[in-house]
Length: 380
Image 1 (cartoon, rainbow, N blue to C red):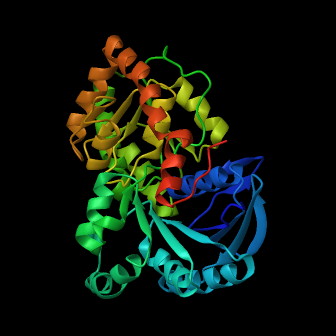
Image 2 (image 1 turned 180 degrees about the vertical axis):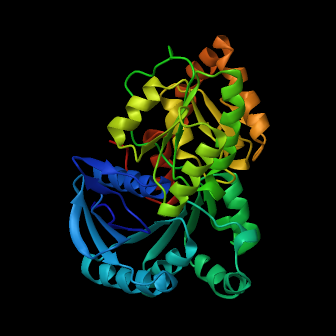
């Protein structure tokens, strides 16, 4: 019997660049990993993704059709229109939407349902209610919640994201399932013997969400206690002025010799940093998941992370990482020095990380996704 045809609609999708695949964030990683799992299991697959320009190409042998989203405020119109076109040309049996904002997903969901197709939505990131404008809250309650409830199932990466979807978007809890974002690659040999006093941050250089200023302030304290400690910042800034702001803060704190801006790290560079750092620091103020945290665990990298709901879930309330009070630079500095001065703790966290990361492997996650979508195919 032929396997169902899958149309995966991604709010964003990675691109091939300089011989590798560029992953700007966790949403792209989740979409790519699910797409590869479907392809490797023999499902006929087409990826449809929003991008800066329209083109048809492939990413690691995945067929990708990109459409230009000309206006941020009309993203549901474009996702609706392009999903309808893709359904007409590809004739899928199932549509899976992967996005970090339901205002993109709603258009694709509506297009699928009006075309008589089953629709599933993987919500990689849910906007915080406190940050929404009043008009968006009204639209959520009167329009978007109804559209989302047209899905067969809605998937959330953590219990906290699921709870937010139920409480804020009035999602029918019976439609909700927890499916973590899968890790698509694991290192062959995690590293447990690590150099001292080399800290790493990986992610977008976005102060409000990622807590970069808290991290820099904590490094000023750490530097006074442990002057040889260095911090590598791996990531890009969405706007040039953000990078200017961060560099200015480094100058104000006198950390020019301590903080090193590495820019975007491709997969080879990231692996090198994960193998050579003492610990990864993740000072985020909010996250729906925490892909880089799981990736660090897989390499045996000890992790220091902010005490937020998603990180508590991933680390089982700090069993696999050190957690500090969100936004508290002094507490973060205490956790950093405590870890760096305790070789036994470093070793314990390093050795406990890889087994925990296996809970988020494709082999663990993809069969759960297939079961929730009523698809039966053994993982190859």
